[in-house]
Image 1 (tube, rainbow, N blue to C red):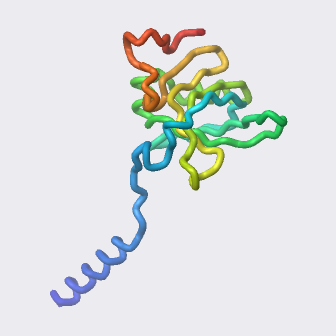
Image 2 (cartoon, helix red, strand yellow; image 1 turned 180 degrees about the horizontal axis):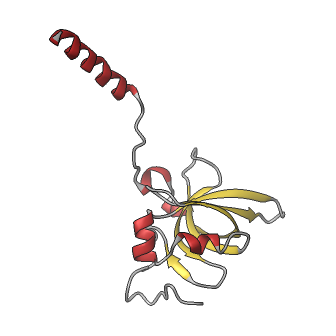
Image 3 (spheres, rainbow, N blue to C red; image 1 turned 90 degrees about the vertical axis):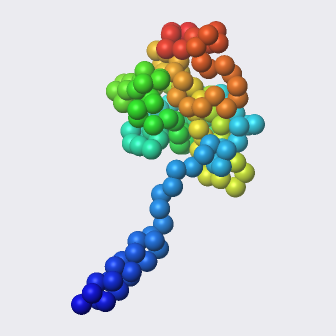
Length: 150
């Protein structure tokens, strides 16, 4: 009987180990900090979930073609604590123009996907929503006005 329990436990352990885990990744693994840019578009939706909040925005290119972009930002606790932004702020801006400073995925990564450093809502409020990978001084005392209408 004890042998059966040990055997079943071993099989169960192997099955659990075989299931891929959703691992957290570092910024540098997926995104290119050397290609960050300002992106403006229309907010379409938000996925307010951990480990990172994601939102979708429609962005027009120089020819007027619209592409849907997926933007990754901080976790929910960081969004609330550091950025002072809540889910309702996103919901209130659906269908409105927003702007981000974001870094796209590296070559070979998912197209039209970026990690945002800052988010400017339609009312002009600017929020730090990601890492300051470009060294823009997005911290206190930097002279960058955050959560202010600009």
